[in-house]
Every structure is written in structure tokens, then in C-alpha cells.
Amino acid sequence: MNERRYNIHIAAGGRELVAIDDFRLTESSLTVLLGESGIGKSLIARAIAGLLDPDELDVQIDSRPYTEYLKRQETLEIRRDGFFVFQEPSSHLNPLMKLREQLDEGSLAAAPDDKQFLGRLWRDATESQIRNILEVYPKPYRPSGGEKQRILAAMAFKKISTLDDAAPGTLFVFDEPTGNLDDKLRNEFLDLLAENMKNRRITVLLITHDYSLIGRLTRSYQAIAKRIVFEELVLHRGKLGLRRFEPEEYLSWLEERRAATRAPVKRESVVTLKSGPRVFGRTLIFSSDPNGQRQVPFEVRRGSLTYLKAPSGTGKTTVVKMMMGLVKPEHMSMSLGDATYTEHTPRRTWQKQVWGRRMTMVFQHADEALNQNAKVRDVFAGLPSSRFHNDDTLRQALSEFFDLESDFLEKPVKHLSGGQKQRLNLLRCLTLETDLVIMDEPLNGLDFSTAVKVLKQIEERLQAGRSVLVISHNEEIFDALVPSENVYYLTASV
Image 1 (cartoon, helix red, strand yellow):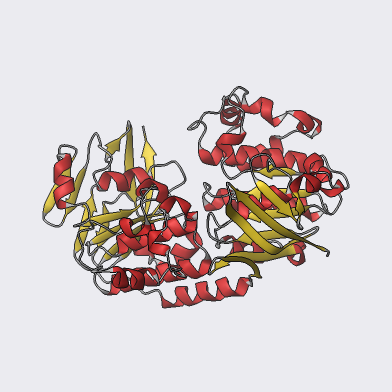
Image 2: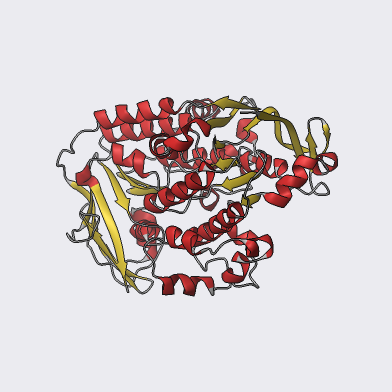
């Protein structure tokens, strides 16, 4: 198998965004590009696919202007025959066209019928439900993010089906295609991808920070196993590089965690939320089984790691924001220690008694939690904790998650990568001595080494008698870490 190698430099307004001297892409293979969010994976992929605007960005590939790269024959073929599934589908679906029209637009009109792809990607939906989705004009929150991801994936598979004998360099990019999908739908997508690669020589670049894909890809697709390559984009002391990621590095770690997981010790409850809270016109039901047959109160015990599971869009984030007093329910009854909180509890009570004192929360999106105009030092100012007495103690804490540069404390948050922001988001909450930390997608955007450090911090917190509640799409990881007795399932009804 041939490798294409690229020297890529991208800047904007005099500020360097990406600089990598040897980026590899193996032809006729599936390259899984791992690495933390915001490190440059998407920019590199867009540059190679010929999708960057040379008038907006200063781009050089192989030390030549980007305008020359755009005229290369291989680039013209990529743009003509390939497809790019964008990470944020909302900005790449036309709000003035129904989804059905977009599925048949341009060269996709020549593709075979798309029912096979849609039926697989909406495996639990009826034909009528799928037809209703296709009649939608896409808006920011309609259909859901996961549905939009599946629509773009279906477009890519339609495009692949038009290629009878694709050239090895025909490039298909899937940028975080499973970020909003549960494990069943994620696996259906991967099955379709493997089937489409089996008899075609296409080159596929799959960008993800979900390391749990490794298990499925290495175990389930023997027909293309020799054509799967794992690479990790890493940033070390400000320099970007690419390293071959061996699947065993993740898989052996996962097995060690499974072996170390112990049955929970029954301790006193930290928080109990009665099943059946009502919010946004829906009733939320907690159960101890995946089918929702055994309804139970949602309980987090002292010193325990608890896992709340449900398909995307069910309301997991709504539940934890309701527990934090950030979303006002129509009905709720929650016990926190010896206090009870309901839909009638005033907001000021949550502020004085709960926030940063009894409970704290790591938000799914770090941008939601951090002031983008603040400096790194300011992120930790004003916390109800005396842990950081000066810059030295702050630097010591930060060094657990960062390769610190001399001016790091003075850096504006908005200039950090997505993964760096997530590390700040996590560290700020972990420094607080609250009874319970709620973590919404805590591994989101992290590279593997940082994810391992975060999980170690969680273990240390549990050993100190604190409690952690997790929501995560990384099911393989948290299923290995959390005893089944501490796993709760969420369903919703109108």
C-alpha cells in the first residue's frame, strides 16, 4: 500500500493554526486519525481534500502555495469523486432544501436507491418515520445532530456506490461521524463503511477522538483488517506530530480496567432523584435494566462511580442540569443529604447550598463553561477553594494535564484547542471538594493519554469518599469501569 505524505502549514492573520512536516495517508486503506479535539485534525483533512479558501487562510502544502495544490490532478479527482462528511452537519446542509432533495442532489442522483443506507442508519425506525425525516428543511435543532450526521453519512455511501472502479486515491473523509450516535448506531455505521470498502479501493480518513472505536474495528472486520491503520495526532511542547497508534495500547489498558473493577460497597446515599420527573413536557423514567422494565429511583452513593445511559436525545443532560438547578422542571423530587429539592426550590437556594459546595458539573462542551476572553489563570479565580495559593501551586496542578509553556497562565482561553479547554474544564471541577461531581461526556475531545489521567483522577476521588456521576458515549470504557449495579437507564415519554 502506498503512502501519500504531506507537509502542511496553515495560518490566519499571522497566527499559526497547523504546522506538520510529515502527515501520512495510506492509499486504499481506512486511516483512523485519533487525537484531542481542536488539535488540527479537521483542518488537515480539509486542506488535503482541497476545501480551504486560499483567500481566507494562508496555506502551504509541500512548501508550495495552496493555489498550486488545488490545481494538482489528484486534488481535482478528490474534489470530483470523493466526499467529506463534516463534523458539524448543520453548517453543511442547505436550510432551503428538504433533506430528500439534498440526498439526490448533483452526482448523488445517479446513485442506486438510498433505502438500504437509510434503513440501516435508522434501524429502529419505520419507513414512514424515515420519510417524515426526509421531508424536513434542516434547522439548527431539527432534525437532531445525530440524524444530521446519519444523513451526511448516507450521502457519502451513495457517492461510494456510484464508483464502479475507484482509483486508490479517491478520498472519503468522515469527520467525527459517530459523535452523536449510541453504540448500536455507531456499529451500524462502521458495518456499512466496512462493507463499502471491501470491494472498492477507496481511501478513507476517519477522524475521531473516540478511542472506543478501536475495539470494534479490530475485532469485527477481518475482511479489511490489513487495510486499517491507526494514527494519532499529538502536540508536544507546541510541535505537532503524527505517531502510529497500536490498538493493543488501548485494548490492554481496557482489559486491565475490567479486571480491576470491583462490586460496589453499599454506602449511604449522596443524592436520590425519584423516577418520573417531568420537564419540557416529557416524563423521565429511571430503570435498572436496558429495556426499562424495572423502574427505580436514581441514586448515587458515597464513594461510587455511577453511569447514566440512554440513546442521544433522550434527556440525559437535561436530567443532570435539573439536578444542578440549571433547568427548571415541571415536577421533581430530589434528596441531597438531608435536604429535599423540588420544582418549587428557589434558584438562590441552589446557588447558596449546591453549586460548588455540594455538587459541581463538568459540562459537555467546555465553551459552555469557560469565559473565552479570560486568561488561563482567571479560570481558577473565585472558586470556593483555597487549593491554589499562588502561581506555583496552580502550575503544579496544571502540569498534571498540560505540557506547560512559560506563558501558559497568560494565554487567552479562546486561543486554546478544544482538548485543552476540556482539560481546564475538568481540572477546575475536580479541584472542588464537593460530595458529587457530575461529568457530562468527560472524555470528549481528549487524547488517550489525557483520558487515562482523567480516569485516574476519578479513581483517586472515589478512594477519598467522593462520588462521580458520568454521562458518556464512550460505553465500552465506562461499561468496563462501572459495576452493573451502578448503571442506570433513562427513557422518556410524553
